[in-house]
Length: 240
Length: 305
Image 1: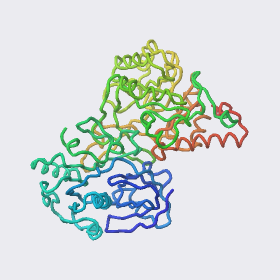
Image 2: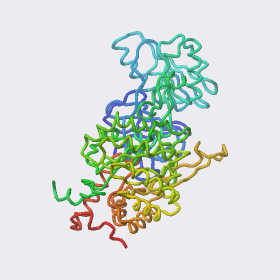
Image 3: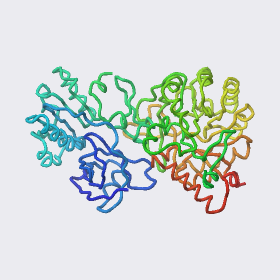
Image 4: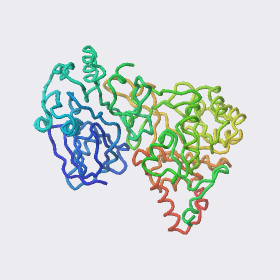
């Protein structure tokens, strides 16, 4: 059991929950969260928004029964965390674009922090640019501006229109599959397909790679989104 | 070994178990993932992911769906095939101090026989013959509904299988008691029950089933009372041991199954509530027995008439 420090409503459907937790997560990883004993049966996979070795934060959207229960939790309430789980975005350097849609912005706060921290040590002058797409209201853009070099926001359109893949060494994406596919195709046209990493989402049960309900097809055969992913090379997912 | 260990010690078809708690097929892979969370040698045993003679990539589309008090799954027997299992997993499992149950499925009689023959050459503790998977189009549950069909597959597998043979029964059987008796008649060393209940969910926006395979298998606490009743009926009807499965999430559930006549129990969906739930169940059964001065679970097995 872990203690909730805060659980704030950011917009109609989005919340940010901060929890005491000594495990440090890497960018792109997630936890299985549970704030009830038996029902709903399954825990909920929620990606890490921030992690500092003493606390972990989650940005989540209320989409069903589980996240609805999370939204009602208060400071001092208990929650069960299993994690951090899954693969992380690779620790790369150079010019990096992080492209997100909707709730897909969640992993890119920690990603920006971790990429910048690493780059400041080894490659001063390198760059992390964020591209954030929202269907209606932008979220947390001020927070993201504090960590990234440049932040481009698109509301109601296609965030993939905003980016020129040729300008980057690495491109990470997280969001709706259609958005990630469109981004991948755009990168492919400019010969940049190999630069793309995507974070997949799927319904999960065990969260640790044992039950195979979250399997996805990749060019390297079936992979477990929870254990082999959620981060995959774009080519592995979109070139079948 | 402490007295407490002794009270949990049991035996199933001649195979000794340090305790009666087993992880159910399909919910625990081949044990490696849970072993990163806790020492799986604390378990009585594990039942492997269902194997087929050739590898399978499993079903398309949504594979899990939550229900009131349960889940439906439509994994469709994604597995590395018997050969892949033997190459990559078997030695590791045999190196552990727990009962190694290998679950075998198939889509045709030839497939079952081929798988059983491949497994004859290797060491394992119990072969669990899965004639009850609802998630494959051909085979699987088709062999576990009609008593005569089940009888035929058990007879033919028994003729080739050199291992202890436990048949995993479907709650969708037209007469589960008669079907269990047929397994006993044909030489099965035990039965395990129940697999998942054939079930369905509909997406009302798309006006189609949630699952590509139309139906899926329901498991979890929602099915426990029915599974318990079936275990009770079967345990009264056969002389071979019964492994009870169906919605166990607490020690109390496990004790109910034992009192209904089960010699051991399997935990499936409960592993998703808490990956180390089986350890709580083991500790809970032990405390229950200790507090009442019961020297071994055998004393309460089948105590409910």
